[in-house]
Image 1 (cartoon, rainbow, N blue to C red):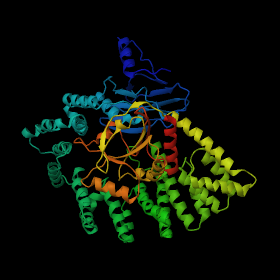
Image 2: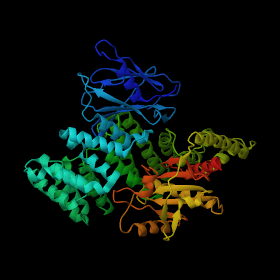
Image 3: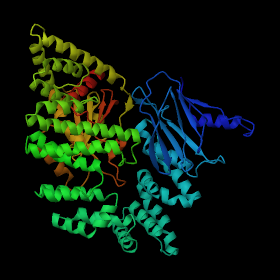
Image 4: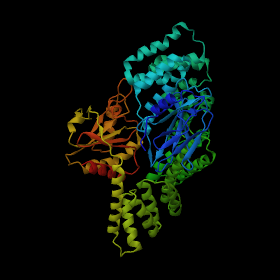
Length: 625
């Protein structure tokens, strides 16, 4: 079914309905969906019906309230779902997932205005739509524009100054993105009010803090925050100087002094958990395990506490050190997540209930992987198998599957190895080591079979499926040109590489998944080292600092990576030049540019498997060459 523009539908309906009292509102069809009406009436049921023939799953919607948005589950039964929203909402943004891909409605998305009982839309409806499209809509294929969003916000604030507090942060942010040179004028416009008005309320001080924060005037903002701390010690902003002073402290003694001085405020503030986590870990690393447990027991957030336990247990599992103590911590992490799965009391605002439940399930699987490895190294193979079977329940990566097969091999469950490894290899979720276990198991089960041929057929099936899946993601998009310096100080210009296949890997030294993907990327670089038609460029981005080049160089050198690393400069508006040009919203992101000089693939994230990473890169290169 051909998709149409929602705005056009609304206009046609309004033109047709000259007499609202006599004309009944008709359902509106957009793409493969039918909706009760072109707008959503607050506090009344609104029905969505899917008319397509794809697989509809994991859909949800955002209630957009000013510049913020909150997710809610969208449950379809017999291809229909019904929602009811309050009248405090500016806009509803539907995100429909069909066949594992979000339907972007030709990049317009599915954005609906909410009207009250009088048929009036929210005062900031236009700003809410434009800002959502620019800030979050891009995650779901919606095309947003910073200038349009900035204009809409400025108009909203001018017409409805009472909404300034809801939009001022976004106003400064977008102004910085569009034209940083205008920030000073924007700040002066906001500050002019306080040149003739006496500052006497918490709201006034909070507004001044927002203005100075938007101008990145840390000196004056710190001054305002100190005044707030003195005058309004129980306010949210009064906590800012506390957390700043804590993380500025140079040693554990100073941190503990700050903690004791502000203990009540830390325990009662939502950001206090970051201080508690930090001071607990500092004590653990300092050998004071009693203090470590005492601090963590002050936290009510089971999810965060479990994360701390696992962060300690996992490296011990990898190194095979202090196994029994690590197992105890790992088991605590599992118990805490399991308890949270029952209670569901620490859900962050950025998760819907269903999304939070899925996140907890994935987290439990990840922590079960840690516990299983510890159990295996403690020679408790049955326990390892039990927990690893939980860890791999939801399409686990190759390394996790490999550990499961390793444990089954150690228990001499060769038939189970063949059965499970067959599935993993065929689905492309294996590793070289897992494949070797498969060959050995086949020979143990029936040495008359040609194990190598069986493996080759499974790999052939996996390869065909990978090619088919990647072909569906093939694009043809202009690649912005750039010139960046590498770590040797030489200029590298993208357009000069036209005719080659170029793999851009956007990364940063602070990015865990980026670092985890590098062993696989090194394999890919090594494979194509002598191929003059292939070029790998590793673009360090989304980080800065005076010692940035030294830090990046040291990281590359310490790990013996043979990478051509380019430095993406940070601009005055806070953006990094090339990452912004390529619309990079998260790292690691790999962009594959074909010999034509145009973007053919964009791959975001890391699968968790070095072998999978290499295979994916190889296949993308094969497809476009």
